[in-house]
Length: 237
Image (cartoon, rainbow, N blue to C red):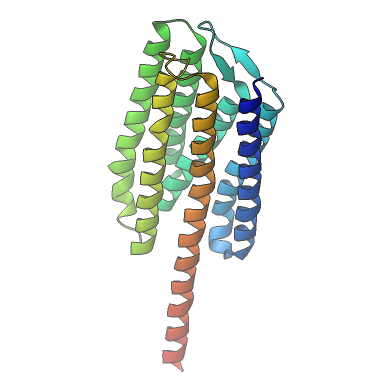
């Protein structure tokens, strides 16, 4: 494997590992109410750490029908972690289990179709890419309509957290299909080294950044809750 690609994957491993440690520390500082759901976000960066370590060791690289290099650990990572992000966003909105499952399945479908499209020859690759894009559009539509409406029934800070995390993932995840099209899986405008750099950077920002945003807002919510409880206790006295 190219030395530069190994470097990007190594940096990705370090970034995800540091993010996992930071989120684990945050996990221990949250209240019981928020701790268990937050473990989902710790799991996201932990899975990504393993995936990037494997890629840095040149494990799981395969060549597609178009001659593109695809990394199985990356797609396994995305297949597991992107539905986990969606599940957390939907949970914050107050969605029920069935809704969360449907949203997670849609997101998983985008990953499977993206991988399948990357593996086959043209023009089937673009057909599968289009199918995955449709699944993603439906997912985004639900997040901004049905699930968004559910979130309006939450308190103001929880609603703000939902909207922030939703917008965060939607905007950042739009980079991935663009890279897919520009890379060797699509029109081969970007080489594998450049794709590896861009995807690694976005991955770290998306996964670690998501967790840090959630942690920061949850701590603010807990601080306000404790302040209100103190005021109520003082008033009662």
